[in-house]
Image (cartoon, rainbow, N blue to C red; front, side, top):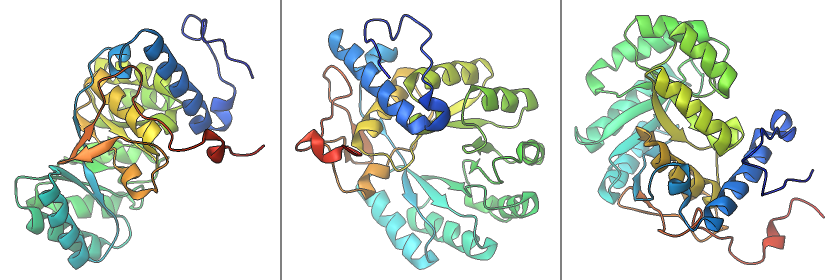
Length: 285
């Protein structure tokens, strides 16, 4: 496959690989946006329509013992994170204990939301939300499996503030979510939707429908985290969930996270570079 940088943004370029691997398409698309930004001498955020700045992100507490979750949440709060995502979806009782431990550890000044990754059915999701009422949760991300869009509708009717992740992966699934009035927030991930171009379209659709946007990630390395952070600046995303690179051995020189915020460089492009020889990161010869 050959891509012409001079016509990539002038034509309706369809990447066949997007149907096979959205992440591979996203990698190509990020590279093209990075090149476009550099040729124009502006940051990627400016190329999208905003300006680069420090980007506050949440941090994640995965499924672990409530005592450990509380200690880790306190440490994250001390580091400067003002929003924490708590993973749930395995055991209703332990999920509630974990979420309660996090709230008690960070107090009322840190925002908390939960993410079940589709691990509950409708009944358990609603039960969790009701029993967690006093924990002041911002919203419930992907409470039910991705193909249960009607359950998201029903949960919203019960007063649950819903964020869709796995249920909204592209323009088609977003259009269905909008038509059904199934969500309050959508989680856009570059690796999930196929790149910045698609993400721009989805952000426009969400904005027109009055939905809020979370900019998320999928175990991304620093290059795509930086691109996603620039995108969050470009569209002024309401929520940012870009912490996966903190749990991966660094393969590039950023972006740094200080006091709970991603530090974007004020330079053309996305501002990060691979560490060492790029050949070390080839998938194959």
